[in-house]
Length: 244
Image 1 (cartoon, rainbow, N blue to C red):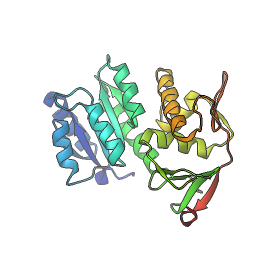
Image 2: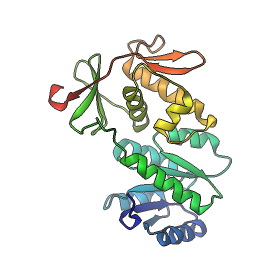
Image 3: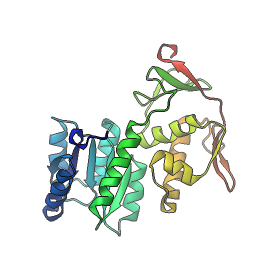
């Protein structure tokens, strides 16, 4: 996405004094900007059009940004960048865990935000060379659909999986039997290296283990490597959609 004129951003922030100047700046950078002053307004707008990326303030009256972020992660395949205050470290962690792609801390430099937007959009576009849309990841009877973001267990049952869990499992499927440390996983899943979010990685892995492990306390697939990180201990192949 090099032509920003084709990129639509949804800016959700109840602070008019921040939202309107930022929208003006982003428009000057060539983006098409839609504004919403609340989660309710954002939901209404999302019912009629689909932006390329959502800029989402966490602290808003009524429904907060984390709730809306969770809704987007569960229902729409939309990149989200959180706009957070300095004291909202735990909210940032939760936001990344439930599917946000990145965050910027207020007050921020608008040029940095533009760089983050472009980076997140590049990651959203990036598809591994062998990841044809009609191919699934398969491991020991399990199948992960990278196009529809669906996880199917060996009995053929659809297993609910969040956006964050999907990204983590796909990272493991792309690098089977390789030890990945937390920084590498963060870079693959969230696109940033920040020790602050080591806990976010651990929490995502704990939830993912509960989805795919027979016993999450004695994991077979996602193994902890002491002092090193995690390893996905399974052979992963690519299979056609009709093999499900």
